[in-house]
Image (cartoon, rainbow over all chains, first blue to last red; front, side, top):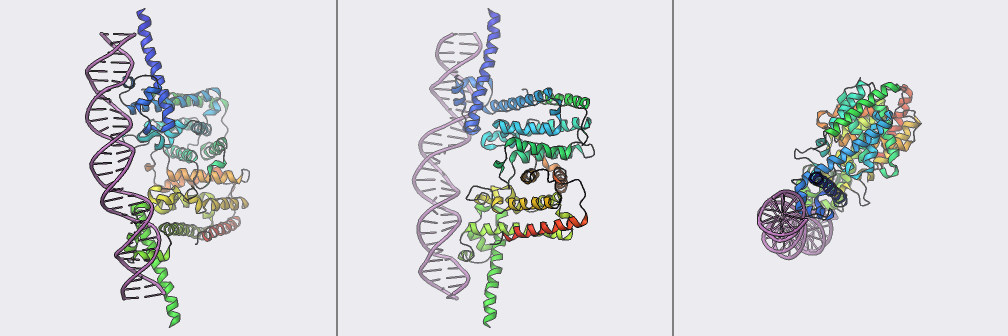
Length: 234
Length: 234
DNA sequence: TGGATGACCAGATTCGAAATTTGGTCATCC
DNA sequence: GGATGACCAAATTTCGAATCTGGTCATCCA
């Protein structure tokens, strides 16, 4: 059964890579990038250390793929939500979901916050920029604003660049949590509501979009998410 | 002339304290709290090191007063702006001024951002909270929201606590600068405009306040600023 | 015979004790 | 009697030795 074998080997390879990534993810959250050793990853994946290097050239590249996958997965979740309900494609709702996603998942939160306690050297790219930029978040955001404008969901009176910057700053502020006010007093979904309200008030057009327009917009938003996901595969 | 003397000595004391604080401020910005030595402060103020300890019990207390004074001064600037034009008492305008103030002045920015690179151990109080809380910023903010609501400048449909949190988060986001989008592309006053617009849209009532209401509100805002300043004197 | 492995190596990191620095005091001086 | 700087203990820095770890590759099976 040569066919079985030649098919089985990549299959085994793939499953092994998954095990390695899972072990890496666990250890990343428990110890942070710096303290995680390749040896320990291999031990958890129950393989030899050298085997890790059959999959990735370096420790950094292994974790880079891990981060890309996490973001890829998160984008998939957003897309699913929009497919279920086109209203989730509205700016305020998208931002709301991004916020909640980051509240739930420590890895994506670390990515967006550039948390060097967890990400270590990964927090900043060789070019000296936050990882989140490297992963194309700002490109996606710019594209989304474009789509929203095209479909009349956000006002076109202000420059698109301003709106992109505003969304980014406001989102960052809510994720960081304010500084002067203790943020623990507010549950995540209450904070998410305040964030959504702020984005809606600052950017969205006052007119309620009709069903058809919403569907069309959702379609383009899904395209943008797809494109962003595509840019994340190795 | 015993009168002259007894008046002259505290006068000299006061002037000397100012020299010490000025030297400390310079060094703080140049080197950061940790690297600044009391010896160097004394040298710059052209006095003996022991003399510094005639004014403050410890290095920390010296810098604590410096920070209080900087914030005190900043509040004075805000108040002056409002006295000149009551419209400066509107939420969006106050926040705008706070943002610009922090863009201009590295010390108050460090305070608000909790920049431990500059503030060292001062960034976090013994109780483990950001300095900005210790300095009563959140109390002032809460009071301002109260005033604005009382004068119908912000909607009373939402809870005041939510509004306080929103202002804090948005302001923090703009001061931090977004993460995904390179912030250098925007000049400070453009960012200030975007911030003001966001606050206005998210919180202010749509109706333009009449002159009289604005004056009355400005009066109470000035009172709140005064109270905050009062809380900052030793 | 080719994929898996872990002993191995060089460079990075950590450790720790000695050396230096610095916040704070106080005997001395003007 | 207010100002000072030598002085001290505690904190910090230094730097070489010891340890650790990313990455390699000769060896070993299946």
